[in-house]
Image (tube, rainbow, N blue to C red):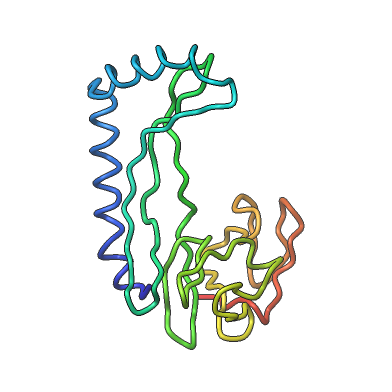
Length: 173
């Protein structure tokens, strides 16, 4: 997804998430959640139930879609319902020289699922490769591997997890 397209759609996903929070906080789902909790004694212990909301962008050309929002309320036997977020963080890439912005668990070229790009550097769907057609754009000092440590051009080893940036796979911006 081009960076401009992502910037256009991300605020809509944020708005939907905020409205869902408002409804949940206001008790709009209380009756539903009570009925779910009442049903649990008759269900196997292995069951969980979630009430989810998604914002999916589908591209006919790619024949793939991306969840820009994947959140909801999860219920499990013996515990209180809780909000869950199944999204990954947005990440910028250079793909064939063009800046793209997409959630980190997707391929920025074909939109197929592609997790753990540094360990599995080739997209399983389109075979674009990190370090070749795809470059991870590092435009802040957050470690791209653990998301918590610090990393810079001068110190390309994460101060938290020890991940070393492969200069062939990233572009500093």
